[in-house]
Image 1 (cartoon, helix red, strand yellow):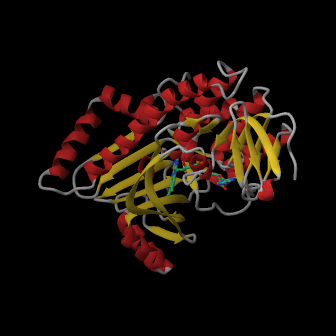
Image 2: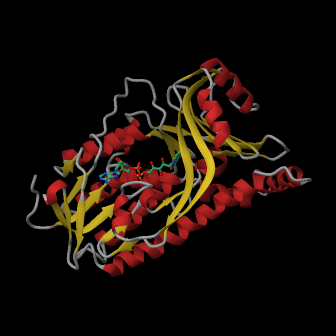
Image 3: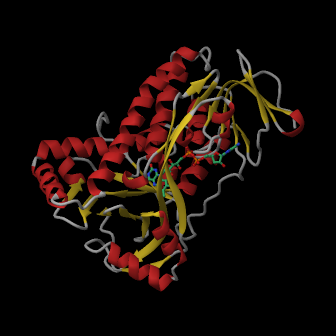
Length: 398
Ligand SMILES: Cc1cc2nc3c(=O)[nH]c(=O)nc-3n(C[C@H](O)[C@H](O)[C@H](O)COP(=O)(O)OP(=O)(O)OC[C@H]3O[C@@H](n4cnc5c(N)ncnc54)[C@H](O)[C@@H]3O)c2cc1C
């Protein structure tokens, strides 16, 4: 397979949500772009039951998807707006609730199935005539001063591009090939995910309960079910994965005590290792990182893809502006790094702080947590600022 010739402006490696959103933004800005994905083309059928990989997206992420012209298609593929969020501590009086009405916004966020988001973006790219290469893997790359040449098995040329976006996920091979170092810190925990039915209904609210290191989220889906993310120490996660369904349902009902339970039914479960990673740099030569290839964080606040889409937004600004003449111009890539790396690092620290604050029962701490959270809950302007930041509403014009 030979796709050599005039170099592309941008080659995106990785057809997850980050890569596909980047490619769509580039195509809409008139750039010559292609997507290389080692897996099959994404597919989604809204007539089937919800699958286990679901993300909550905030207003900033949805704003980007709207500007990319896919928000309507997403709504037709089961994106679900929710208006409340409730967070509480299993071992103390800490309890906080956020409501869209109180914040003067129509919703706090959306639950979106990963497969739906990827399929909608893929379709939009196809309609624009963007070159999409599923089930294609690169074997080697030449990092040249003016372009990157990408080859398949046997040194067969795949593509040349003036900028390659590495959106190939947490274990990015392209990041490694570009020589970008990454710091890695395992949480020694796994995220167990499933789709469940509950007796009481979710009330369009995202529910989250902290029980020391165990953090359980119930995220509301459009069909009344909830997508759960249960972060557990590794050995406990293994036990939960090995349970039969009735035992799992019983344990889960106990763990969401005070929420939308009891649980009455479940899909099969899956689990993911939880690791914090951060690339030391976001670009090397003409290879730039975005999304999980640049950073991964604990899923406790559902921020991973929100940060990835914020990367996309920042990168597209450079590509459509200062880097219009040369997408690989290091000045624009440096500006992108400056815009995103400190922000992503801050979010990682915030997640770690949250885990430390809620992850211990040392004498007096649950009461102190309760007092602190009650204080925030009572201080309307502070709570409002916290919520606007958390839900990506600051800086959004409505
Ligand atoms: C349990 C759990 C719950 C989460 N919940 C949330 C949430 O509520 N909200 C949120 O915002 N985030 C959440 N996240 C994080 C979110 O899922 C990720 O941040 C997001 O999916 C990353 O998208 P991505 O496109 O950057 O990477 P990926 O989705 O990993 O996509 C990478 C793509 O690159 C392809 N690829 C890999 N290697 C190659 C190669 N060599 N050549 C070509 N293609 C390649 C892969 O096949 C894949 O399609 C959660 C994560 C976990 C683990």
